[in-house]
Amino acid sequence: MKSQPHHPTRSARHDDAVARAAVVLPGATTNSLTQPEGLEFVIERGEGAYVFDIDGNKRLDFMLGAGPLVLGHAHPRIVDTIAKQAAKGTHYFGLANRAIDLAERLVRYVPSAEMVRFTGSGTETTMHAIRLARAVTGRKAIIKFDGAWHGHHDLAAWSMESSPTSAVPYPESAGMQDGVLNDLVVLPYNDAQAVKSLLEQDPHRFAAIICEPAQRALTPLPGFLETLRDVCDKTGTVLIFDEVVTGFRLAPGGAQELYGVTPDLTALGKAMSGGLPIAALVGKRFLMEHLTPGSDPDTFSFHCGTFNGFPIGIETAHTTMDILIEERGIDRLTELGEFGREQVSRVFKDLGVIAQVTGVGPMLHYYFTEETVTNQTIARRANTALAGQIHKLIYSAGIYKQPAKTYLSLAHTEEHIGTFCDVLTWATQTALK
Image (cartoon, rainbow, N blue to C red; front, side, top):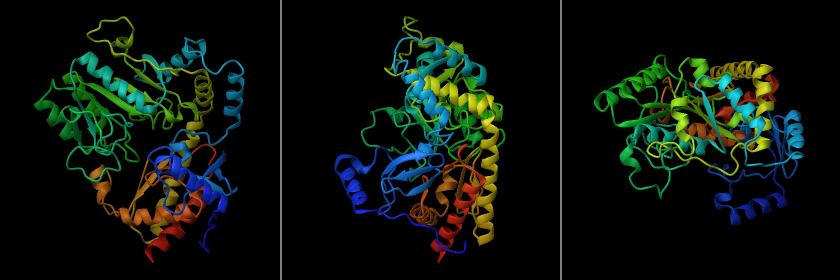
């Protein structure tokens, strides 16, 4: 890179907005993600591959709303879909024909889907998947994998990507329900032998194994997902794939189609509707039928929600699937992801920096380590201090992304990836000085 990148500035009005946020929003944020200190900005709008702050500064967006904006911001067909449905009504609560249509599409696309329940978020979906597995099996214990993100309910917020240790199940929050830890085992991702050994020792203890088939930006080792399927079949344990991130991003049927392993239940969300808050729990009929009101109370799993299947989300999901699946948008996402990982690898190679570039589909990440990163224990051994410095520098130069993952969308181009790599080159050189 011949010169430093442009650094957006912040006006007095912008400073005031950031200060106001700190007064009324805990942590000056609407979620768990905080911006680097001194580099906070307030968004006014999004368009294509960019967000614009209240000063009019343009930032290249690889955050993509934490993943849902697989088509980019304000995609014309999404905007049109929202306007048309809003004119017909924004919410019904009752059964709608287009919801039936969408459920049929999910059954057609997703290998594990025989029945469907719509939900409002990924967190809600994984919570209901676990509850359903417990209701049907009569067991309580679950297995999750260190570093996996399954939302923020009490059964999920343990040993997440940001947790500082792999040694014990680590609570991400105070105030967790008493007793959860008694029914939770956390194992290393990609450790097939650990799963086999545990279930051989105690084959009737576990209601479910919940797994991101591609966990964060890590990919499954050959045989890992197959082992999960095999041990669950042998022990009557429900296999849950959390495909909130991978669904409709890697293949029409998600990671389970890509890797050829079919779970019993699947959580879907994020990319499903191109940016609207709709999600779905799908799965095998022998499990899903226990969500039926009035069914056997001994195995009935209660599920309800005011905005389940809300019409605007249903319609934007149809439009998103038209673009991603019927018009082969996923192929383009795959192409961009492969290009992005190749270019980022080249940046570090040209700089003589040892790094592992990971990811699948339109997602990538990099770890500063000589080790091949296959689980969160190895990820924690990487040079996270250097990664943190580089992230802050990238952020200062108008690249909007989270520390742990880079998302690509159909609004991105090879030129956008080139811009990112230019900034990454500058940031890495600066951090190493």
